[in-house]
Image (cartoon, rainbow, N blue to C red; front, top):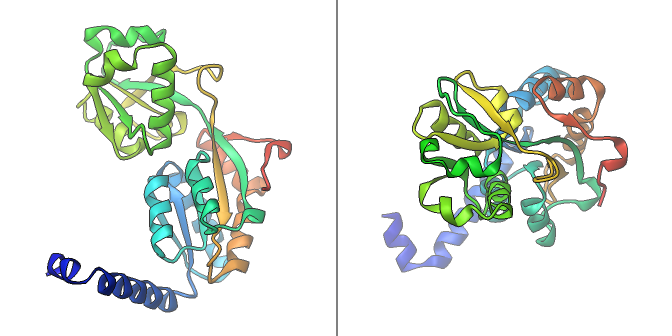
Length: 265
């Protein structure tokens, strides 16, 4: 039925979608809607649960790949606070005037690592070890859109082994999907962030990629331009920068950035 409607009238579908998004926004106006990178699932959930009562409203967390969340915001899905991995998708929304640049901050980071299943005997000491047939298939996030995948490709290209490995790659929708593939032993190796690896029970870090090869990814946050709860969103954003919240992030393996490196654009 939907396909028929789309073929019959693209305009009708756009109007219908806009109406539904508007209705949803009015219905949940009291909620604080936070769209966050899937890599923050555990830490941000813990912080939100601890502060929800004090804020006097429900904090509704939507976790997915940063690219997927940015597209939802671009489509008009109601969101008050956007938190993403790396700059690509935050920059994209800023160019579209969909975030408030004055609220933009980066305050935590994580570095790229190579993981294997906990039972795997594989030893990785350098990039070219990945060329060994025994390493099997290699899972990475989408190298065009997913932060971990983009940086994985940069690393492999730096050592001129991307083309040699391309046929062995399993492309995933985000770092957590890569993690799941390694946990399930569907692939021999995966590229994820260290903070993703640390929450898993069935993987181990085989190699930590030096910052000189791939700089740590920064996590960015900003209020959306059309937030219906901007005061609450700013309050929660400020809460994420406070010592108690930083201690939670640190416990989950994130690096806390210095005040000097925070970006207010």
